[in-house]
Image (tube, rainbow, N blue to C red; front, side, top):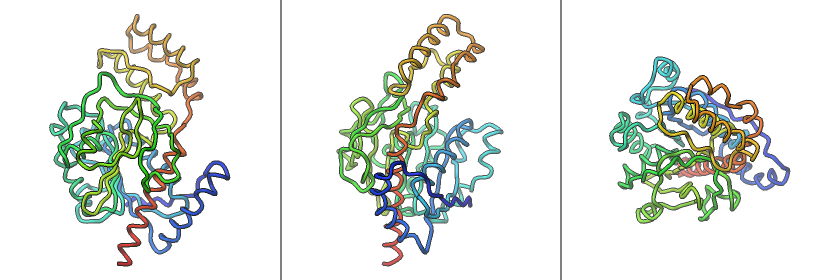
Length: 338
């Protein structure tokens, strides 16, 4: 088991700290005699494994303040791995250990899809077993991006729809439902998205899902549904992303284009770069479209771009996860006192 004792982060302005003081105090009081037991099933491709672990550790630590947590890492064994990836996940707990234990909360990441139908992915059987296990062995489970799409397909037969182009960038979302998970969150919030598919909101509502946040440009952002003993939380966006994650993903996709692994030049992330960087990257696009050679990826102004991008969603992400941890603590306390 990997033990992660969250430390107290900076909460921004004094006003924000005061608003959150009551919730943090309740959280500490409910957790004095125990710590929250969280599982993270990290299914990201090899190159993103460590970054994804780092992102979730940082976000959970910031959300938890000074409350102790145990974080146990897993990965689905059927996710394709290189030798490097297998070495990385060899320090994780075996997925077989999951079936015989309880976690207060579980987080399941997505991965890059390779099949048109999610049911044809090699890890489909293991993933659906995780979903069914989580219904009875967690108080709440977060499903991120592709895992969210897999969850609604398995539980309710809701199929995602392919987009004409990648939905990529930072989008303004609005809170559309009063719910404990969005308590203290702003009415309008920024959230990064990176996906090739979308979920029809009308299908979610027909099947009893509750939409929490949505965007005019990106569609449904976050939604929830209670299944047996667990509250399932679905994120189409990525609150865990760091400031530079979209930037590095964009550069990666340009490299794939230059190597001939994709036919079209990738779209620039929306709402992310300032005007000066948009102009520089547009000029680079024209250069690489005219001279498609992988070595020219070195001309990508990565240092300048990293210095300009900012994490405009961090405070919202911390609040969402703080509320999730508060929910877990409350559910655990109620269960133990029953």
